[in-house]
Image (tube, rainbow, N blue to C red; front, side):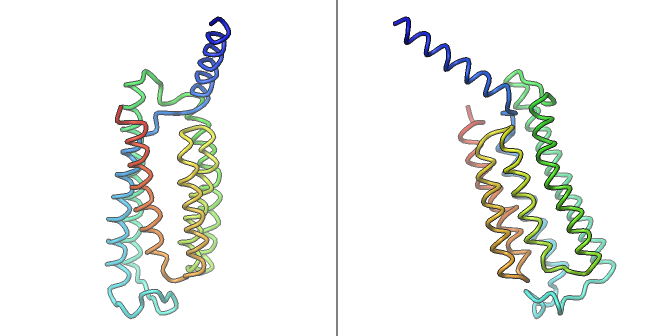
Length: 207
């Protein structure tokens, strides 16, 4: 009996140490909503740049004017800001319920490790845009976002790692089907976020 109690105590201590080193208040519902925002953004982007269906899937024949660029910038900024605000608000509420601070050592490590691949990829993609190499933008955004998820998964819920791996695979697949980046964007940032967010919600948040 004493040995069994001793082993239970060790297991409990290990679990406490594991939880203290990870930010476990990441909201699954925020992932679902981010996916919905992305699908709406993808549809708005489609109606903006593919008003002529003959250019679908062919970047060489795609002509984007200044007003379209401004609209695309507004769409992208709105989706990103809405996703970030939703994630922060819902994660803050979840942390409050579990008596956890949203900004602690674990969340700082999470943000830093998530940001490193994203910032690197962001600058790389800006260089490609400057060189007018547009075909690789969609695959690279998926790949670098996936790398960010995998890198950050060490400091949060482990399921984020599988989301990252899925994003990387979609990004690599997208390089084979250049010209259909918007479709892969919608599939990765939209559908995958909704699916993984739903899994995380029913697995961690509902209780």
